[in-house]
Image (cartoon, rainbow over all chains, first blue to last red; front, side):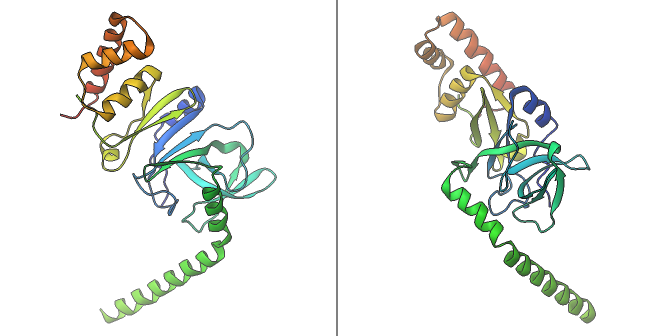
Length: 153
Length: 89
């Protein structure tokens, strides 16, 4: 599930005009960090190139706005992934619209240079292989369960 | 009058943006943009129940403007948020 729907069409004009944008979060792709309607993200159009672990906004090929995290920096593109997704997205560097600079989570303000947040983003990425395995095992169990259930029906 | 609960006000660059959260997010999907005076008034009515006169007084004290100008600004502000359905009934 993507969290694109929360950015309406004003996002690009607003970023051009004032260089920043704020929005409530939607979708589950950035859980456990962001939860639907609970948190607020503040994005800024950055002059410098985003770095690994930065959460960035880009427009997908289908015209949807996606806010996910950079997990790898290549020469002319980024590998981007939601904190709760398992499919990497390849995005050309010039398609990045804005970078997450601050957020309001559970009513508390945070900046991305805070130690706690930095530790979370690195740790969450570090344990990705384990998360991936758990996710795949869960999907497998789910598939087996459905097969048995269907057969018995 | 008092502002409905469920809004978060954020300073983004030189402007202020108000965003609805929680259940309110389903009701207000728009981004509310405010200048510094608007944000000043917003913070007051988000915090407590006030009258238009009290808002005028706050503006006069804080910004050191004449009462006429303050009254005009408050009237315009109240009309916008009232028309937008942002006030608690």
